[in-house]
Length: 183
Image (cartoon, rainbow, N blue to C red; front, side):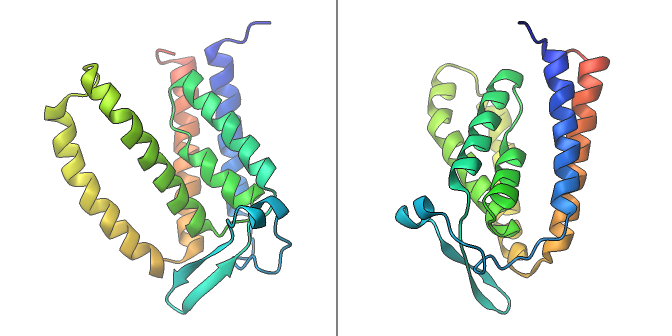
């Protein structure tokens, strides 16, 4: 069977809106009460994260489910040319039970590693305009450092609201591009 990009984009937009709803559902931040995934324990993925009140431990659960969601997100990212960071955050937050701040920063790190690995290839092939990317980098780096400092003291519920808003905007943009724009 053949599925058009427009239909795939509409389905993905619905998933984004549902994901925005899921990220607003109250969930306890401390996950040490949840049973950890044996594979996560074997791979030593459980950890801690800093808060203004001290370091808080967390347990990773449902690692295969989280991996599967991220795999699908990567495929969709490749098919539609969209970033999969939002789906990685949802996989880690909802499926794997990681604290929201850990999910967002881990996703950011994964995106950075992917970008660093591919940027050399893209640059040598002429896909990156250094004159455009350097000013962008000069804004992104200080912003990332500032965001990392603010994150420690930020209220998780406020971050969830901002994240949900971004997901809804992404969904509407996908619907617009699918129905009116040039997809």
